[in-house]
Image (tube, rainbow, N blue to C red):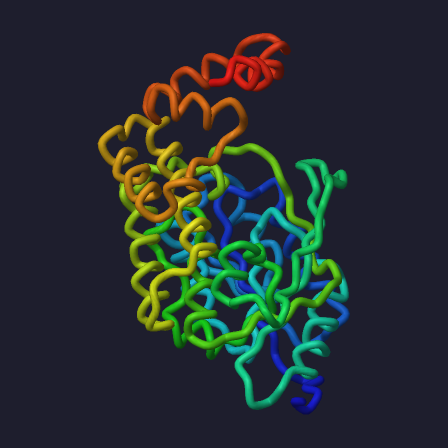
Length: 337
């Protein structure tokens, strides 16, 4: 066990892009922590709204800077570079830290084994744009018999759930700036492959706001930078996993990565990148031929009947039909298709 570190500095790193509606509340949630030893670092990613004006209004209470729009991963990496704390807590500019979040996670971190690379992560409470609660769920802790790689792929925490140690983040080079989606999946996998253990703390630590907005990173186009960005990332993950384990992928890991490829393939296909989408689908089938197809029924059936490209078109049309669409899977079953 580590000695309790009541004075350990925690750097709260916040990327901000066109978040004038929420950034003030996010900053106040960081300032109003029951744990006193925090610094707040906001990296504005070229906002075009009133975000910078709001940041300026906090005066010396926060550290902030603004630059060209380069994406949240680059903004977070800049925050890591500026951070002076032993610990780093990421917070998006539209989310809210619970008031005792840092205090509780620092205490939990002090209980970890001193001779192991471990970090604590908590749960998220989901809210809508107005702050109303949405259905939430706790993350599953890894059981001793479950492979850490398989677990982090299947149960990856959201970006603001962990209390990271800066040294771990620096050692792996921080976030991958090429990714437009799923940066935390990539970061957390690389941390596990570097020997870091994620330790679940079964308490909520922040409020995660779910809403639709084109500026949200989770709503960015799959092909914003390149249709092959996510394909290349998963290829990199496959190589890293094989190098780290010295073995072929397990069936479970193969299935998880194949299904992730299939989801990304559907995304790039909907954005018109047909050739690239077929490469996602073909590689997914190579990894897990029987379990790679993911999608709401009757999508998997349509894929097997007509192929992935025509299935996307047909399924989109079916989804626009009346409520009897829900009866279509039963029709296929009764017909023996």
